Structure formats: C-alpha cells, structure tokens
Length: 580
Image (cartoon, rainbow, N blue to C red; front, side, top):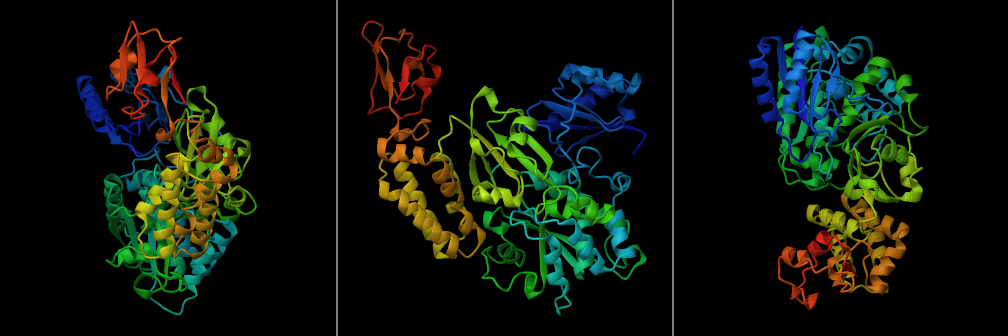
C-alpha cells in the first residue's frame, strides 16, 4: 500500500453512473486545498453498496463514506489529510451477515495495482500450487472444498477438472466465462473490475491442475472497464513472470488472452461459448461429448465462470477443509448475489450458503421498498423460479432452491411486491428467452414462442382454461427435449408461478381481471363521481384526451380512447379513479 491516501470513488446509483464527473470535482477541490500531491484518486469497482449516493473510500484507514455531497468533499479531505480524523456522520458500517471471500479485495485495493494485490496474499495460492503441489493434489484440495460451479449448473469443480486432467489428449484449454447475460446481473463484472488478478490467478491454478498451457477470457464487449482492467492485470502478470514461460522458475508455462463476446445470452452455455471463441456463430453443440473431453478445437477444455475462478486461489491458499466448513452439506462456501427489484437496499452481497432467502431480503437488504408487502423473490435470472412469501425460510443452496422449483443461477435475486403481476413477470422472462434463443432446436425455438403466445392471450383477457394445461405440456417438452439449458430452463418462471400463484392465473383466465393492474388490456379506469373533487388533474395528465367533461357535469373516461397507462390513477390525490 502506498503511503499516499488513496480514495476510491463510486456513484452507488447503479442506473446513473456519474463517477467520472465526481472524480473531476474531487480532484479540483483537492487542488484548491493544496493536498493534490498527497492523494491518489481511483474509480472503484463494485463496493457492494447501492442507493447511497456518492461513495468515497479512504483506503489508508479503510473507511467508507456514503451520501457524499460536494460540500462534504472538503471536510473529508481536510479531516483525513490534515487532522487524521474520521467524518463520523458520513461513515458507513458494513452489514455483518455477509462473509466476503470472493469480494474480499473489491474496494479494498487498487484493482490496477499488482503490488496491492500481492500485499493481500495475491498469487500465494498459485505459488503454493505450482511449487509445492502436484496437479492431482490441487484437484484433491478442490474436492475437499466442495466448490461447485457458480455459473448456474452447480457442477463440482474438481470433477470437471479431473475429467480434463485424465484425458489422453495433451493439448488442453481453460476458459473463463465472463459472458454475464442475465438481466440485472453484475456479479462477474464487479469481480473483474474490482479484483482482476484473483481471476487470473484462479485460471493459472486451473491450467496447472489440468495440464493446460493456454487459456482465454471470454468477456462481453459491453464491459469496457472490466476489459481494460483485465488487460492491465494480464500485462502486469507477464511483466512479473507470473504468466508465460517457466512461471516462478518451474517447468509450468501458461498464456492467457481475451476474446470478446457480442452479448448473446445463449453464449453463456459452454458449447455455444466455445463455438463463439472459435469464430463461429454461438449455438450449442450436442452432448456428449462434453467440453472436458472435446471442447475448444476438439481438445479437452474446462469452462468456469468468474466467481468460481476467483474462489480457487483462496481455497488453495487456506485449504479445502476450511472452505468446506462453510455452508451446507451439499453447497459449500459463499455465494455472491445481486439483489434488485422492490427492495430498500439493492446491491451486491456475498453470503454463506445456508442463509435463508428471508434473512437476505429482510436482514441484509432491509425489506421491501416503501413498506409494502412482499409477494415473491425470483432467483436464477430468466431460467429461475419465483419463490412465494411463505417459502422465505428456504435456504440459499443448490439443493434447497431446487426443492421449491428454482435454481441458484449465476446469482440474481429480484424482490417483488404486491404490485407485481405473477402472470406478467414470467411473460417478461419468457419473452427474453424467446428473443435470445439461437433457434437451433425446435423445442426451444417453437415451444418458447408458443408458450409466450399463450401468456400474451391470457394477459389480454382472451385466455381459456385449456391454455393452462397446454402451458404445462409445452413446458414439459421443452425441459426434456431442448438441446441446451436455455430451452430446458426457460419454462421455470412460468411453471413456478403456476404452482404457487394458480389463483392469479385462474383470475386472469376466468374472471378476466389482473389483480395488480399490470395486464393493461384487462384494466378499466372509471371515475367515481361521488368522490371526485373535479380538480381536473386527471384531464391534464391524460396524454390521449380520453377524459372529457366539465366541473359542472363531472368527468368520465372514454374507454375506446383510453390506452390504460394509469397516469390518471397515479395523479388523483382523492382516490376518485377506480382501477377495475
């Protein structure tokens, strides 16, 4: 760590990142106070803190400040540089329910400094592996840890590595899957931006374990900062003899390079990703053979996602038994989640396996936004299931989530309240899967489209009872016959909501009503003349002129003109607009 005070800056409003502007302002104030030569300012990666305005972290004293305004900058600089004091009213206290293993360096070190990574036991796991252990011993240690793939499938990491290691083919490859395609997911991006050397170190260890000499980062092109920091970290690793020929004076040689993805969701599937790296259209291959037997250019290949690889150095350094002591019987260690939706404290969290969903939502995330009632929590992204309120005691683990019809996925967790429609939500996810389908196999290409058309009919008030059985039949066919996991899991949101919210589906089909008012073609807005104060706010805010009348005669909604936008309903302070 440099003797200078290093400040990491970030805008915690994830939908409007003005960090660069804030950094310029911070530098200007530092110049005005004549302390510019005493500080270093870095744009942070993800600190796991959201909805708390601008964040400043003083790395020298390991202090985080949140909701920092322009006026606060001078106070922070003066207190830190001249007085060596903490600004207590801005200080942030991290949540103690979290256990940061993968994210331990994010926000703690300068991600573009290999020296600071080395200061946090960086590359110690790699050195231990290639200098003191055989490849077989590395795989045995991974087996002890119980680490399972964090990309979604949850396949045992050691087993995948052993398949490749035992291959008779001497040319083998390692690929880091950083093609993070789930809506609202940013776990991998945050690790790449905040601790790039940890992922590189994990890839080197993986390469040593399976006998590979070459590896690839497959990163989506929409992550420019992540790409830049991986490029910087790779160059630093080469410059320090940690990549290339005869690493640390051993006979082990390993090279890494970057391939950019175009953002196709299907390329998160292993064989489609391999096709893309080879320069082909990203479509899945039939399996078997699996990539560990015949993968990239028909050679044994292991593919692990960013979070999995970032965990590897810690396991080797601290031991598989230590990591295996955390979590449940079948789900070891921690998991990083991106909590979003109708929740007070959205953000990135890392929790031990076995914690309940309720503890995450009501404890770490502070509960539902606006004091509203929780309706459900969806895990696993577009391929996951919707878990109802009475299942909030479900543990975060591969086996327990599967029991309630959901999956771990890569780590998305979306909170829904009583204003969310349990027909409209799965329709959104299914539409995403239909658009992202590569179209190679008929069950996914045709089945997903047919399911979406049925849901569209139901949402428009044209559904019939037979449609509900038809949804189940198509879903079963997709799950059993689709070529890859995209098609096999695309029906999950529909099936889980049909299981737990069957009354809501029947309400849409039989009563032709949407409880939440999200299925707009079923909704009618009517003005209650007995309650209306004739303030005319509904008339003013109607964009299509669907509300007519006068203060004397009263106002009414022309249903033929109404586009069901709900603007009148939202602006009426007297609750005279009735949504039916």
